[in-house]
Amino acid sequence: MVRVVSSRTVKPPPRPRERIELTSWDVSMLSANYIQKGLLFAPPADPTLHVLDHLAAALADVLAEYYPVAGRFVTDKHSDDTGDVVGCSVSIDCDGQGVEIIHAVADGVTIADVIPPDADVPRVVRSFFPLDDAVNYDGHDAPLFVAQVTELADGVFVGFAYNHALSDGTAFWDFLNAWAEIARSSKLLAPAERLRLRRAPLLERWSPDGGAVAPIVLPCADVSELVERLSPPPLRERMVHFSAESLAALKERARQELLAAGDTAGAAAVTRFQALTSLLWRSITRARGLAPEQETVCRAAVNNRGRLRPALPAEYFGNTIYAIGTEAVRAPELLERGHGWAAGAVGRAVAAHTDAAIRARVAAWMAKPMVYTLTWFDPYGTMMGSSPRFDMYGCDFGWGKAVAARSGKANKFDGKTSLYPGREGGGSMDAELTLTPEHMAALEQDEEFWAAVSPDAPTPVGKA
Image 1 (cartoon, rainbow, N blue to C red):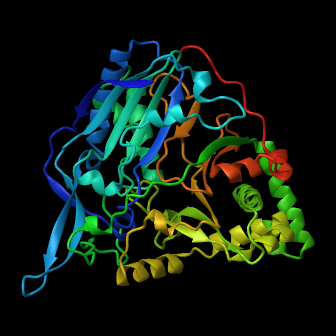
Image 2 (image 1 turned 180 degrees about the vertical axis):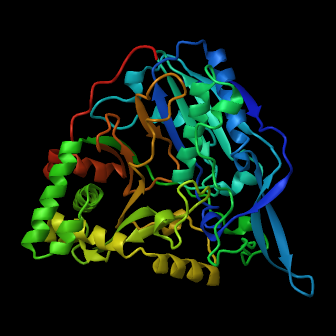
Image 3 (image 1 turned 180 degrees about the horizontal axis):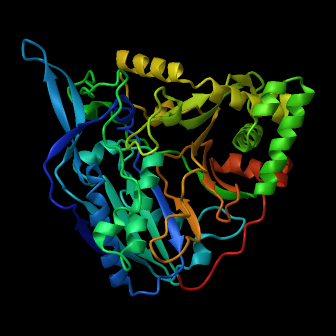
């Protein structure tokens, strides 16, 4: 259904070659999949080839500042005094090797086919993303970033595959928005002017002591020994929408329950994120029908930038995330304790993620380095990924605001939920739910869950 028409390599302007060492946060991601996120647009007014040329020119411009994105990973071996290999380290070789833009066509596929109302995410969406089964380690040979522009019958989908060992989602969306800003402005401003429209990325990597980043030496002859390529079981995916009003009601419900339980501090601190996470954690746990003695934990990816002391600047380019977790609770108790208790548990986990806690985790990892794989995921817990704070709908390449945001099949497992900003803004959110078919079927019968879900807004149509 989707056929590739062409592919081109885009390189940054020439610059001196350099190496950037990966940090513990980066190295631990080497066995995970590439980030796969994409945006659906109404059809641009310009012909497709003009659009591709325009995107490629803007991408070359942004790579002048985000030049590590155009590099490749390299592995260095480390030996002891006898010459025996005792470990290896990975860095980014910034030599302008390039990124790729793919042009594809999805014959007969419409916007309505991509985002059907009240239904699973169609499987055709997966074919809008390149590097489908790649893990971040593959960035030794594969590009660290590939964009696929897929023509639809009445629109265009731009799918991005981005190496997660290069940076986290915060820096990824900053990069995309910088690219989009240059593309929007390129018809109006000279290159020297349009590059001043945004803040530059901070490429210097963080180290715990504030000094230069030393190579992270892994205890293996080659990093490939630590990489696992696992296929998840069959999964269903659904996008559900929560209006600002629905989230406010969830937050107020949690607040009132916490006050009734005497937790005034928790009630004062509760957020919309905590309230939505509570709903998802409890609903997914109920859908799984866990045994009474089974414990469950809710985890969430948290940005470390503002929690470190001194804080890292918002424009820090690299990974700086950890998955935090609530206290473990038996499944029946989670449901009995109610919405407010679960929201408070998420809040306590967030509050405990301080500078000291972050540095303790870094020290523990350095004492025993490891690479995360899917074997680490908890089949009884839930995991909240992505963020409604990412500026997905500000990513306008000059064709107008995106119709919808979607993802590929990468980094998904039963119980994984990714949060997106709602298209209408105002604090609304979308949640991408991933569950086994039997668990999704049970969730579809959950009255408490669906009472909080808001109707989707009408799909915008017409040319950008």
